[in-house]
Image 1 (cartoon, one colour):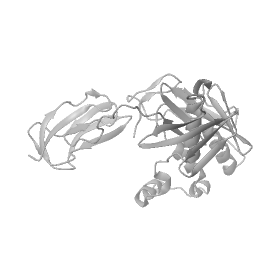
Image 2: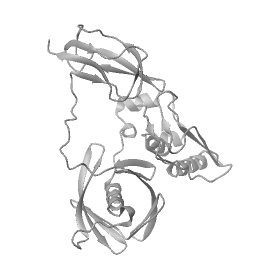
Image 3: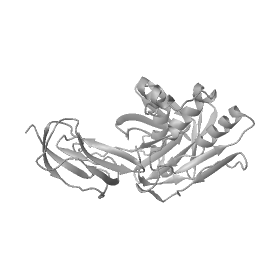
Image 4: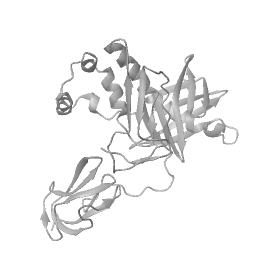
Length: 300
């Protein structure tokens, strides 16, 4: 789905003239708006043969995370590793075939235990100030990533951090942060990730995948459940079509309003049978993500 928002990090580290080229139309600190094409950047690689070009492109993609808005970078990384792509056996219908089959490559990737642990370590050591309470260098840290939430046990030791969740324990022997590059040692091997704090949120890019972590608010959360009485815009965009009018009876699944963003049309449908109580938009109106489009009286 098209994504809009502010770019908090875009510093592609692909210094290989004549081998990898980056074409982009965005800059760090700028905003992606719904009024342009969905492509924000393009990476092009050249190699001795197809396998060499794929290897270089995969490495470049891993070293060029774009943070702040959701992108398809993780899918592109998985696609480069897929045997059908490596063997040049792709067709114009392959993505549709994968979608119909529920192929794993089209499933939204979730952060693994190591990524959760690294996020906890980065948050615990933010700004170089360990979170100690009464001299105790061990504490529980709650983190949220999307709809998932974990409480991890963090223990500081020397230059490193131990992170435990359930039966899973991970040790980082050392962590160093040079600007936005997070270097960490585990089992004697140094690795690197991109870690950018944007207010309370940690944008963490590791191994070609990026995730956003934050500590949940201690205040009770508002009810975020879907309300069948209200149809809201899934993205910022422009209303392309309004298919209903006040007083009209609708059935579950019936199209209500179409919002266009980045050359894609997204229809909002009635979540239940009812009557249209109010229509809050007209064709060509600009709407923000989450804007109320249509109100329904359910069950009438």
